[in-house]
Length: 143
Image 1 (spheres, rainbow, N blue to C red):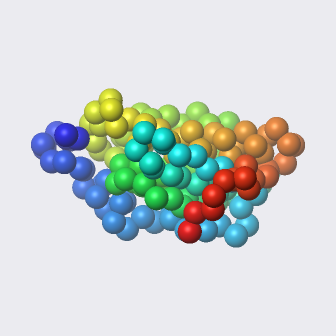
Image 2: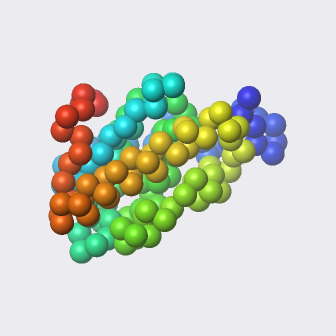
């Protein structure tokens, strides 16, 4: 069972971000995109970024995932705009957990970290090519 200090299944933040994510949707101007799946549970997340002048200008996510993963992706998409790509890459699970206000069991930590992994892949694709590009072209598209 996932608990927070008050002994509830999900924190208020996780419930709110899962029910009404603020940053879920397409980003038509995205120039750095990556997607990944957690094969153990089936969570699938795509992160779309617009990177300009070494900074993340905008971020959105799409996916089919559990409440924890969806909330983590939504928080991450809120945190990265305005950051340099290096600062965005430096974000970790502890940063997300602080905002999610939750004590996540070790067996569910991949739900928190999947969006971070996808963010890193999107930013890596941008830096390897010298300019942002998409890494999701060979994957099954998400709605």
